[in-house]
Image 1 (cartoon, rainbow, N blue to C red):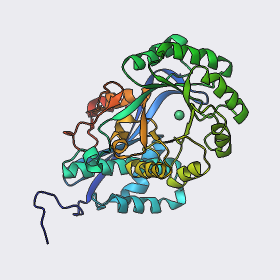
Image 2: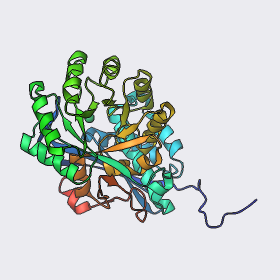
Image 3: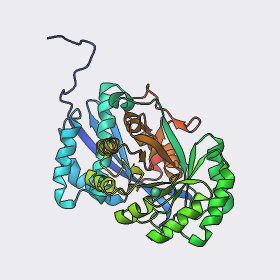
Image 4: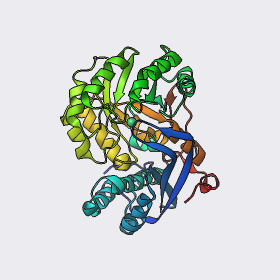
Length: 373
Ligand SMILES: [Mg+2]
């Protein structure tokens, strides 16, 4: 048998020795809204896992109930779990929450823990997570995302215009809170970004199907090339109806509320989207996000990440189906406030630092502590 003396053997037992969970409530810089929701703060739930003398972090954006769920339901199961065997651990945790349902609070809790395990495993091996997962590309393309319906036209133009000037190839704004104002706001956004960036809109499920079709024609006049959740994402027939009738230059996108693989599979089977979105802080962490990306690869459909750009970077680089990541205003702000090592975009692209192990993020404990609940 040949030996490979320079390679650390995988599969060695590296037991989880501790898990702690904390919750932070971070005010937005101004009150924000989309078509169907208003918010003045964001809640971040952070899972920290110890093992092999290292420290892994994972997080999700959800209610404090997620933290309680991690502490009461998942922590007792994790003691001694092998950091090197994440599929085994993820399977055990998923089976354990059968009666709570593999969605919502339970799925967000699983997601934070899964991401923390991947961060920890990479740190134990002394690798960046992007090197552990492997890459099909060196950097991740971004689109700037904000354009809230609470913004004035001036603020909307300033934010989107700044991203376009910085080299982002796409920007996204919210529509649908006051449908009669959509056209004026979309026109203003196009004026702000000119021909430099693709213009995306997100209706967060505001319209019914026929209304969405009318809106698609209206938005197409301003070169909108991505129409996200024109109807509620649960309405797969409605999405399919719209997708097959909009101009060919317009993509229908949805999937951010996907918590598990059967959800994404149903969306793809229904022909509901041109671009599938998934959020690793909801859909089972790095593990669930990779699986959703492979579903897209099988169908030759582009795959995109929702929110939390720093967390998605390593997995996005590993997926052939991946096209573009959402550089979401609120989460970019929070990631920079909370973590050292957050990569800075260059010309609309994000590149990992191979010298930083794991996700490359270190919690700024004193800064984060100001927002602890
Ligand atoms: Mg959205």
